[in-house]
Length: 113
Ligand code: SF4
Ligand code: SF4
Image: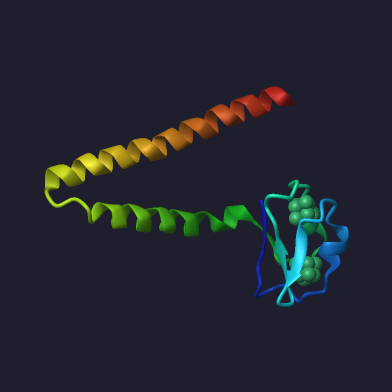
């Protein structure tokens, strides 16, 4: 899924003209994508002269850090080692479930082709 790197965007507006779903608007001289409207066509990646329309794979490290921050925050609610271990087991199950949901989704996407 695309996102705009505000440090690279120069506000030229080309992506706004080319986006087929009208998902991009200009906010404070930077393009911004409304992901509820974006149809994931990839056009903005191809046409941005500044390479400011980035791929979300670049955000994986940031998302992992956010997850770890969340887990650490929740962990502060548990005092004993036993409680903390129990919590960590449960939160691991939460992330394992996410993997399963994504794996099953990928299988079903393959079937759509
Ligand atoms: S085409 Fe690129 S540089 Fe121009 S407004 Fe869109 S994201 Fe910014
Ligand atoms: S991926 Fe396509 S629909 Fe989504 S913001 Fe970019 S140009 Fe618009």
